[in-house]
Length: 181
Image (cartoon, rainbow, N blue to C red):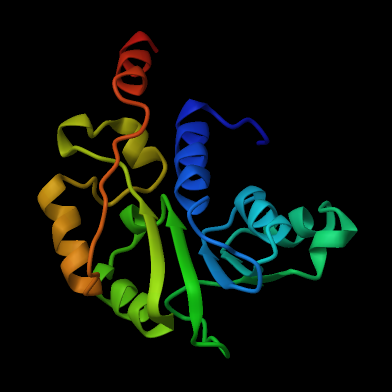
C-alpha cells in the first residue's frame, strides 16, 4: 500500500530534522528496512551514496520508479540484514526505522550495526514505545517487543554510543487517534 499514516510522517519529519545537521554529500548511508525507498530517495538527493536493504520484493520495483538522476546513488539489496554479507563495512550513517522491534536476535543485530559503522558515525533507530501500548496491531505486524526508556538505554549501551537523544514523536496525537480508531 502506498498510504503512509501519521506515524510514518512523524518519524520521517523527525529524521529529516535530525539529518539537517549533517552534510550528507559523499557520505555512505545504510538504510535497513528501506521499504518503498522514500527516505533513501531523500538521502540520495542530498548527495549520499545509499545502500537500501529490505526483505520486501517491492524494493527493486520502487527503485525502478525513482527519478533516473537518483537511481545510481541507491544500491538496493533484497535480503535479511543479519544474513547479508556486506562488501563495504564503513558506513557514515546507519538508519533502522521501525525494524529492531521485529528482530529476535537484537544483540546480534546491534553488533553487526557496530561493525558496519565508521568511527564517529551516526545511528538513527526508531522503535515503538511503551509495552503498555501493546495491542493486536503489534502482533499483526510481527512486533516482538516495544521499548521503554531503559530498554533504549540498553540499546545505546550495546552500541557504545557516546551520546544519544530520545525523541517521542507524535505524542499525544498518535495515542489519542489510536483510541478513536
